[in-house]
Image (cartoon, rainbow, N blue to C red; front, side):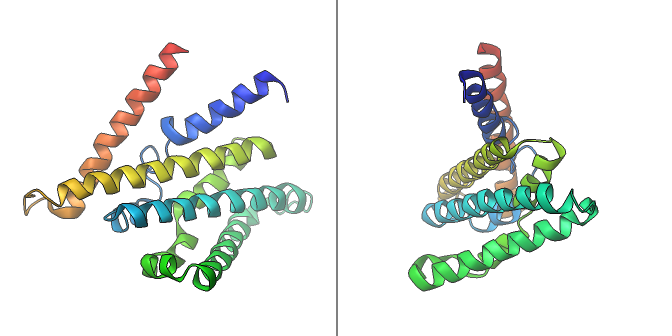
Length: 200
């Protein structure tokens, strides 16, 4: 792998994590972002879990798409296969956490099985096909997307902890202030990506 390929992969990771963040640019995966981001520790654990499922599911789905669906000319079934793989990886992870890390499993509650329907994970799997990435680029994109989603949910949890100590308008409520914070974060991420692109 030469220097140009490494730089290209780093650009993919940066773009996925910051410039086109799944939660702030595409607004995918916002349900757990709103519901789980009240505690920093739980948010970090959820971010790691989503990142892990995203990485494994993208790798498996890439192989399934290019070595099963395309040769058989049944690409139109990609959504079905992608969802099945994501559900299987989530189920495996759920059983693993229940067996070896019961405290983490208990802290997630109902939200752990909902990883299977997290649209950010499905979005990454579809985007790598639409952008015609190779396997390494697909893994880099899913890694960047996972890290970006982890960063956003941890930042959200940190900010919401401060918000809980202040008075919020009853007309805005906790959900409203969370979406307002997400909007400001989206502008900040866009500004950061613009500055870095300008320096390049």
